[in-house]
Image (cartoon, rainbow, N blue to C red):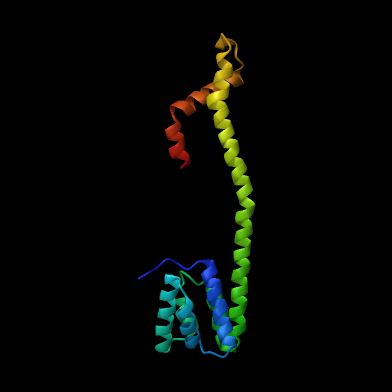
Amino acid sequence: MRFNAPSLKNKTNFFRLLALSQKAGLGIRDSLISIKKTEKQAGLLYIIDDMIEQLNQGVNFSSTLRNHMYIFKEEEISLITSAEAIGNLPDVLEEISEDLENEQKINQKIKKASTYPMVLLSFSIIAVVILLLFVIPTIVGMFPSQDSLPSITVFMLDTSDFIKNYWYVILLTVG
């Protein structure tokens, strides 16, 4: 049974809470039980339940993560495997949560940085379509003979006619 994958924010909070409870002296199983009590995201709850069940069967923590590779990255699992062997699991869990938090910040900056260009592109496309569909045909209609129009104007008129006649094809192609 699979649920929606936890978001990056859910995953960051999971590792942060796990690090805090480990630093407080709780064992992995008890830490997971504690986190489970406050977690609301169904996908993460399912994973935590599965991890607790595996820990009860004697499986080590990194192996329980490996069973959920669709959520946890190989790098995270490798770091945790090493930390289990060395004995610095709380520090590594905190480091992973900080890395995930930095990843979140970078993703937010990328979204912010791409918003303005997308808005400009949208307005530009709308402006060009308005020009081609309404303004240019109106201006050209003022000239009695279309034989004497410059080739660029004729091209724009043909483009305007194409958009008017085949707008649905354009929408299907873009969409």
